[in-house]
Length: 292
Length: 294
Image (cartoon, rainbow over all chains, first blue to last red; front, side):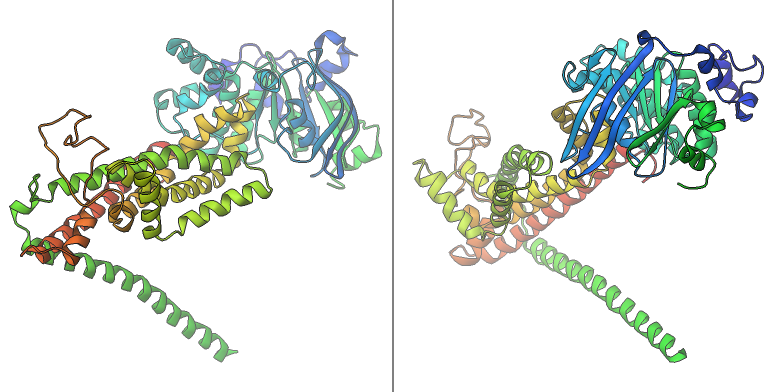
């Protein structure tokens, strides 16, 4: 853990210089800075979602969602199971395309471009990476796992690939642990290592957004903390959207929180406000643990 | 209550014995079979029988391996894509049902029928002589459905994460299949190929009218176009299984029975060695891909 903290390029402004981890354990929400920043201009919008409706055959999974996701922030999506938060996340990089009977109306703009009209889904996924609930390393070596994205994009220069592997594994805080095992199978790693490797694999594809679908729910608390630390470091360079079932997690790391219920977006505000001063009584009931 | 528990326990023990006994019986049968074939075969085996000439079985051993190799290559290039189609591309509907039914029917065709079909399609209709290629085509008709369904099952049983992970990185469907899914299935496809090969080694009926019953090769002749070149697939060639059949039915030689026993031993040895080798290879690949977990 100490090496991780030491590797942090810059301690975020809202944390004391010396007490990186302790401050996080205080559950001091990251949202304060956001609130002061006020309403964001359109320049820092990564996603702009307008009146999004999504249907699975007959059932409507998302109802008229309008929200925007801001650059270099962590946006948490919370809500009880089946509320549509994962569906919403998968819509952002069109991973719903393969779901049979899935129908979408409304618009989603990624950096100003309509993802359903102006962007090729493959190109979209180069820019918008995804980390899944279960770590999903391929049955290949660690090296081959990390270079998978670059290879897909047509990079085959050996030294360039090696550079990408080191850089992205350092960013994902697995380089020191695994640099001597690059040619061993990724399936032999522990769950936490596998998940950080998957983050490295996502980073290697050079995205600007990372979508995380409950990335820590299959991990133990120590691995969870590593992933959370990582997310806080990564938001310096990337925009992160995370679906989580842990309200503590949303509170610890996110700048804004969106609360979904039965396919509707109930509340979407800076995290601190959502947890301390929710507008909706449904949000209050959920975040205080009275249902869900 | 007590009686019921005692009854349950007694049944438990009885069924354990029955199941273990079944497994033991299978192993004993196999051991008895192999040792009988080996002992009776190697007892009459003479070095002359193994010679790579007109009188020995070396050529037949080579023909067997060559036919099976060709048949496996043929069913690999057709069966694996067919399996990929069924697992990845086929939508639910009448077309897929028909394809699947065709493959299942193909798998249950009697091999003598395949042999007759092969004779008609690969010999009569092409106007050629009996040849190894026709033989391996006939064998591949038998192994193709097997390789197809092994590939399909292997793809379907992969963790969904492989697919998601790859697609999530912007890979196309084909890139996902070719770079992640098929390599991940490799050990299972290989196991399927070995079982198909076992089927091919023992095949006699399908080869009778296709590969022919004679071998005339010259080991000094490596001109592929020449009829006596060992590697020329358009030449007749008798396999070990066919030789056993011939020796046991219509042969007039004095040592026909001995020839048949020795050929059987050789064939069984070949099959056992092949499946051990394949097991070892797929174990190696498995551990290499699966880390230290297995």
